[in-house]
Length: 219
View 1: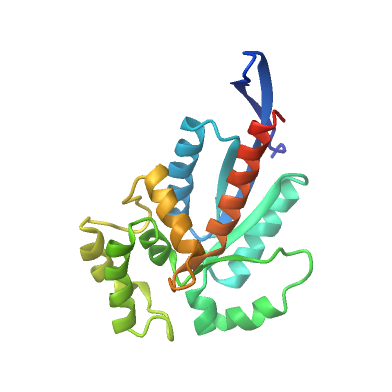
View 2: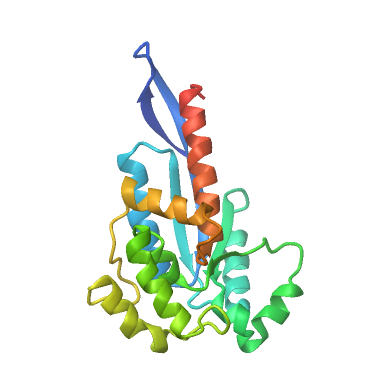
């Protein structure tokens, strides 16, 4: 597989002179189809807003530590220069399923720190709603003691479908990524009172802010 190439996008400055800004490609090793669907929707938004970022999902077919590391090393072997992020759910690491947390603590230095969704992808999705709606999901999680012992998907998926009022299945994208949903995500990510957090969201906003700063400075 050839290394990913940087692709230029066009923007105009105040003098209407054409400038070229490199589209920053970043590979994301992720658990599976849910994250892939989210990344595809996110890429649509970034393109529409002329934000020079593009994410390339690579599924590890699950969040188990051994699978994630295997996929990372496969991708790194194929591309030596493109930045690679690892985005997985925290739930199985908190439960130490298959000794995942034990193995993560022993990971070698060539494996980057994982970006975790606390506790799972659906918790991350709930952060895209306004606080009033998100708190409905928060209440449900408290009732299941989800923040102490993270629930398995078979335990929470029926409730999550009722929460979003959609016939949602893993691998589908039940919400639109737009300015409003991303602003909700940013607000909740920065609010210490909200128990849901996501390391990928933190990195996403850092990258988006840096890209906006670069555009404003004409670089």
